[in-house]
Length: 437
Length: 154
Image (tube, rainbow over all chains, first blue to last red; front, side, top):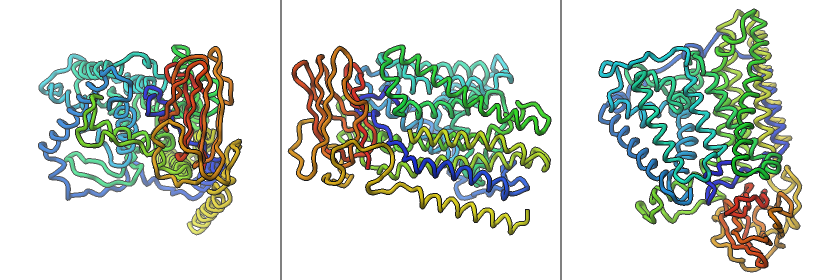
């Protein structure tokens, strides 16, 4: 898996899920799908955000510019420290950079978004820089209007770049590579915000804003136009996701890369791929990751062709309309593959915050802390993995059902679901199969 | 479909899922499921409860009190690893790894983070209690060469 972290971090993967639990998970997914087809509601309940309730209590705190800018300043400072650490030419995990970027940030923040809503909107150092550099209208008139046809493609491409860095690990032998990439990504964002305006770029091109923004829609918490906290049904936030070019690509990159990561930990893969080293291994991993993403895209597209036939429509608009129903599955895969990685390998970060640059400091007295490898029992990890995959499947089925009955007439709605259900059962079984390999 | 029928369908669905779970859940104790246990013992391991972290050093620990030691010998010649790709042990078991190589390097048990130097004629010997579950890479560190995967099952 994450070999960039090789030393004292990583190199542990979860035990394969027992065959019996795999069968249980797959069977449950099937039962749920059929029950859902017959008993789920006949009137849309989640579409247009469903019912919401405004929470009045925290308004002053959450809309206070002092609070917001304190949080932004702290987040920017943390980003700066981690970037400096990423340049330190020490053994990779001697600094805080790898564990912070690939564990706390990439996995931890993703989980936090699905639970608590869009935190990156305030934490993002790129957004904060854009605001500090006054790249917003009316202070700044961007020389170009953001091309509508690009949609979220820039985010999809940059997201692929990140997972490629993490999983194919092309710069394993380039010390400080992570630091150069972090600085490069910052310049790229500031440049793009200058060209297209901060808001347009953050919405479409900043990979993490788009990705975390998707996951945040799973959360029951959101902010309304006046900054108040709004409570909504979990998942309901996904129904207001605007179909734009590249949205599906972002979702499929997230889904396919996690699947590839799982696949690359199976005994089958490890035993065959370990004879490849250096650039050959990087090429193999890159091709395999792209292959998995394209395979999943193909399966989804096929289901959409089938659904499109039933309603006499073209498959593409149907495909974008149902893209949101894949987001719970993205999150389910994330939990299944990285839950133990966050809680076990993530412990490394607790000691590194005392010595972020690997200089032998002990700022908070935690530098000597060691990882408790036995924190989670194997059984607990299995249950969390299977539960996550099955619940993700339920979420996907519910969202797809709700959209089908609001978008198609009753005669067609259920029939359009057969193909999509089939592809979801396929993803779920594949996810479980990988976990049990 | 009438509302009552829908409730019945939902309840039947839940019942089926619960029944499946009861039948299929992994048995925590022995017959636990996946993969075959090639380790010599299974019953008599000195089951240390899984709270403590990894044992601190790679130095050979004291002779185990209760059960046998699961030992794996691996040989590396001309870059070829001779040995099984996977080493299955039971959680809590004493494990002994001996690596005989024709190069000078360091053997690293990931996760447990144990090291021992190896050079021609001087095999690396690492002995410890496998008290954390999971699959761990054992590598020749500087070459990044995978020797085998250590699989610690409950």
